[in-house]
Length: 174
Image 1: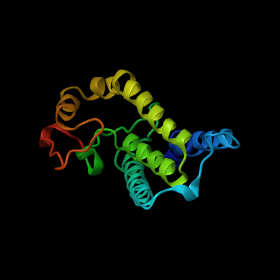
Image 2: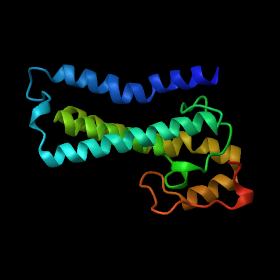
Image 3: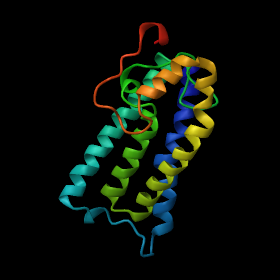
Image 4: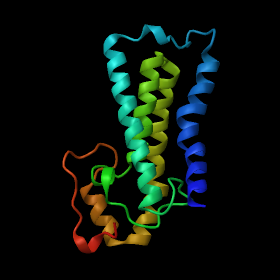
């Protein structure tokens, strides 16, 4: 049951952000000045795109596995992890899934040389920058209280910290 819920949330959330919306944008740009030009990516853009894509896939995949195995939930806000995750990428950044998806979108924009996908990457980030603090973070704050507050004070929301944060033993359940 948990696996089915996790797969559904993957298809619905990051699947829409990294496959459906970019696909629709690429389709809408055909025949216009906004057409993607995959062969036009510079060598530096190609290297940076591959690195962003690989990093984004690893980060998103790791997050999904942790949500399911350790958190006993999914990445969907309506089916969040039951356990407080302060392991793996969560020791470096509070929203590794969003960071991973944003990196994948940057990779798609670079590798496809697609301005519309680059614009979607910016819009995606701005939507999450507004949504997460107002709608998503109050949930863990209520459920976990001081433990989450302490975590929030020590782990950045978007840009990963270089050293992993070590939670005090009594403040984390994972």
